[in-house]
Length: 274
Image 1: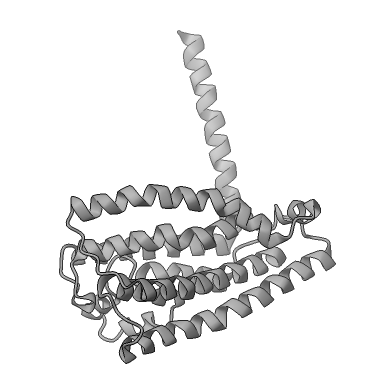
Image 2: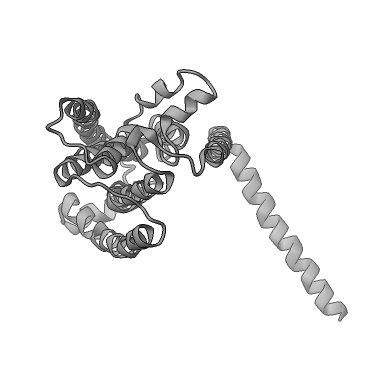
């Protein structure tokens, strides 16, 4: 019995030693500490606002709250896997191996994200059916508008992903620009509640949301899938044009930043560092 207690005591001290080591490593990187704490705070605030909004109608899209959330699920399954797959598969600690295979990077990335994307589609279908037949989700879909929403949102998210990868190739850490944008989207992009609801707390703050590219991703998809908005309608055309400005701006910039980061890492001999 005494031996078991002794071994348990030793094991606990070893575990605490690892925890102490990791804590010291964590607090060494001051920027990482600050960004993680800010991310947590914004996440808590976002969910708190979401809890206050829950089960209210959504007049901005002539729909109910559950339908509003389900379209967010659509975006998470049809658009997000593209950018997330690129960020996870194309990073500083795997890129050198990718280049050594001789396979073109676009082919390699598409091949790497093909199955996760297909799996996301497969699992999404039953989720959508449950939402429609069990929870009464009401979707009014305009196929043409949905197609254009997919193109615009994919260009926006791919541009942001390439910017992030380009900086990480050089800095080997998360860049502050895309981190700031991605963190603010949790609160301001309308993921789980309409951005207009923010004005109940600080009048006019919702206007800041429209400067975030992710806001347009969610907005255009919800116009296309909740209001059956036609791009032939001048008002809807204007909304799509506004979102397209971000896509046309971010996609080529993202590609240039990625190429810059890749060439810089090759020149510095740090391509495989992390």
